[in-house]
Length: 125
Image 1: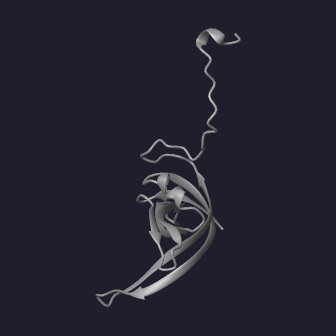
Image 2: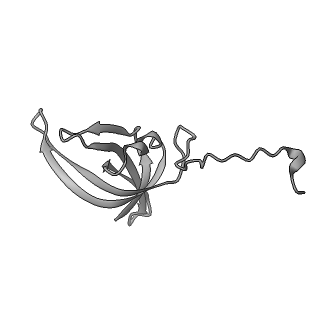
Image 3: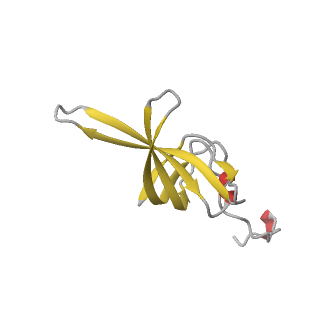
């Protein structure tokens, strides 16, 4: 399944009791439609996401970044301390595609370490 949305907060790396690292973040997806009366209805769905493959991705998953995620969704329900019933959606992410828009201007690409030290006088045109 694929979902596209914006991060609602910066990603966090956590370590499990088995010493495995997981990146946790949340996204909001927006949908809109027109009802029978012709009114536009906006609907936002929130997903709590986890990514187990590499903790380094947390550096570029910042609030506001538009991402496209591939993975599987699961639902969970619990009773809060106040006795109220709660429910949420979890997205177990297997692939992340960045579309930009976060507060940091970093990119997910790494540099090769090679440099091209040509000056403007060396340009071929």
